[in-house]
Image (tube, one colour):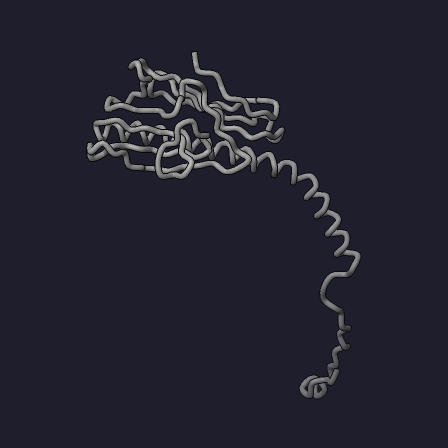
Length: 199
């Protein structure tokens, strides 16, 4: 390393600075990777729990929002608005699974229902309805869901996933008194069973 001219004139000469390579050694890199592997092994089961729990809650919230919006639309349109299972998103499907559902209404009173909203869940999430659900949940102009005989509807939906992570593998969405909606997490021992109608 050459000594600068101005330092030579003053009589001061600095010792040369030894050169050190920057970076990590192989041992440092391997220790870091080993620690990362241990952290990942501990975190992955927890991440699966959080991911599945989030998917269940999201699907249950989607169903709750659909029912609440259908109720508000029935009041707003001063007419019947229904939520029903659908296989294609273009209309109701009698006896279909509730993995996709639509909100329909005859908004212009011409006898033809139009689709207002479409919602669905993806595998492995299932939506199972209790017996009172039938093929549609119909809200009338007063904002209440009623059965065909005019009595207030009581129905439950099970939004579930066949898994042990989380242990509470089902969110039960319940509609009682024709309009009150609640959600509850339940442990179904990794199974998906249709819920019972509320008492």
